[in-house]
Image 1 (tube, rainbow, N blue to C red):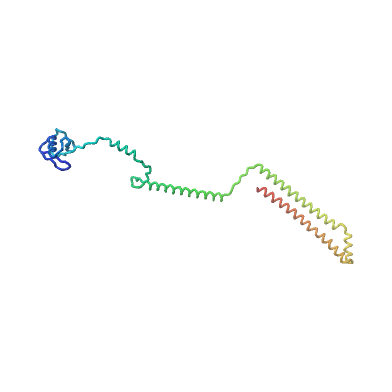
Image 2: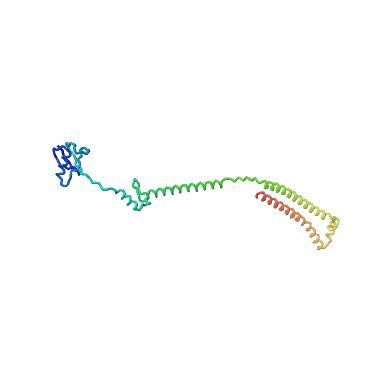
Length: 245
């Protein structure tokens, strides 16, 4: 006995065993259905016209295909559709939009760049502080400068020695002149001292003025010595400034 099903519904139960006879029985049962428009399957295998059927079998309707050319039509329509280049609104496999992913990458890059800039600024400050704290090392290798410096020192020494000699000579000449004035006429001086008791006040005033002039000679000598010392100091300061330059 053969049991024929169509879409899980029993449509025929017969004692016929041949496949072609069963197809004719099904076409007689359904109007406007030809035996060529159906085929039978059993256990997933398609049955031929002369096969023997026993047990359960399935009836399948044939599907008529089109003329074809649908793929070429799709290609023609696709060429006319505008292709977008903005894929920011698309999503990845996890469901996140590409716009958000790109923004996150951009923020990470900016933060990394800011960190690098901050580290560079700190390193620059550190190097600047170390440079300010370090002792500068000067290495001069100017031969002409060294020669001029040595000659300048010799000139300064000779100028100082000459100035000292001139000051000593001027001091000696001033002291000699004062001694000559004092010892020029001792007899007249003695007579003046003796007769001073019997002379008027005018004569006494003239003697006092003469003694004051002799006493004023010592400050003149002191001024000469001070001028010479100040000149020596000025020369020394000029030499030191030239050496420092």
